[in-house]
Length: 124
Length: 182
Image (cartoon, rainbow over all chains, first blue to last red; front, side):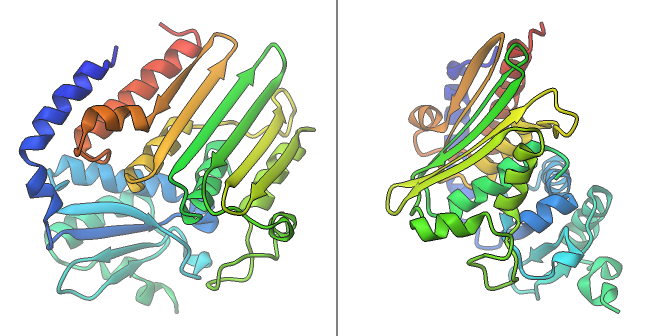
């Protein structure tokens, strides 16, 4: 049974590295489009795949996953934008949980944009 | 939408965009009474009477990125196609209450789906908003109130990985109990 006492222990542990988490100007951001169009196209499993893969690789302190609204390209949903400080923003379209894993590994970890999933490669 | 939990996630985003500090999501289901009721209540900026009348129109939206707004119309349709009902009440400056009632056994009933995942994502992506989630069945009910968690956590954020993991497991355990599992 999950108890509030357990939560207290989590707080005490988390407090130790709180400052580390808070002030990370180099944190990369994963923005998943979660308006009606994104959700209907399957954005939730994509977001879950990103958070799972990032946790698995121990990147939770340097990458944040968050949701964003509709940017007007509903036909390309699920849309995911990757923002890495100092680099140009990359927009991935028609995402799936499998593609999400590859984007984490190739783009976020190894800094190689997965060109074939980007909007540029999918609009012709 | 393949699951009602996705409609809930969609409509809850409206509350967040309305700058709600508190969003209460309630799911009451009963096989005995053959019903499932969903309510999403927020203390956001609210809407005028005119806007409330417009939101059920798919061709109305306040967005500028596209010309249609399907969130509320889809939610309304999902309830009405089961012979249920749908209602929005709103007051400017006070907040909005959206309610959908379903006839559970109807052939056009959409499954509720993974509502816990919806709640977890809402908390993860909006750690500064408070959520109160209540789920009840014929067997009992439980509530997750992030204000209570915040009291214990102090300045440790709700989106700390260990905290989210705790929330996940809590939701899973409690859900099993209200569905009569072991």
